[in-house]
Image (cartoon, rainbow, N blue to C red; front, side, top):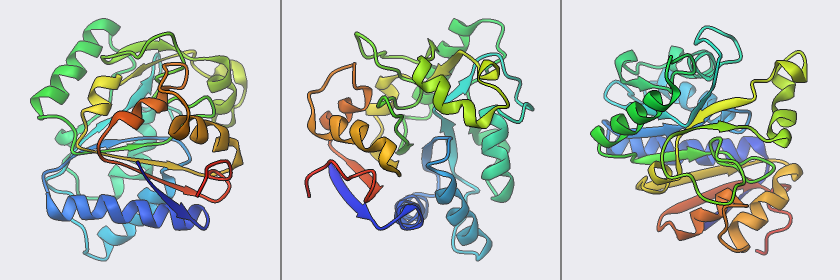
Length: 243
């Protein structure tokens, strides 16, 4: 693992955006694994600015998102479809036909999960996977468990994840309790992985993921086994990690 210290959230976002922009410039048809949540927002804003300046071209890029809430339609303002279009896709020149996000309203969850895995395989895997990390060290919606979930799957969210996501909803009871998440196989087979973290509330999860044992109870710890992982985090998030 390569750990890069950032001064603050803005510095973290710029450093991470640099890595993604280099990927797109060097391989315009890259398959980008993308994430939602507050951590990547600054990255997307920076990439949009560079696109608007004419420095980036996403017309040949392809994207596969990590996850989606189960039971939320794509036009719901809290869905990850809406998030990605509102904060990123609607502001760049990516081909809509090359944008892929799990369908949280699919009539058959198992069939949708299998379809998503086939799609990633047909694309030849992910070139660069962007990840955030949950307070309980989840990546995507791969929650702490007694095993690593290999394939895309329907997951019941832990109470800590529901509580953390309450800030995006009017009430905690409005937060969906299930989601579809890319599995660990597609994530760990990505050619490059970029994980970003900001804030003291991520410090323990980051420390356990980087320096603790590899265990499904700490889902992000599996990244220790990957050959090309870059972690960019601010001082608060890395406060428990040795320099």
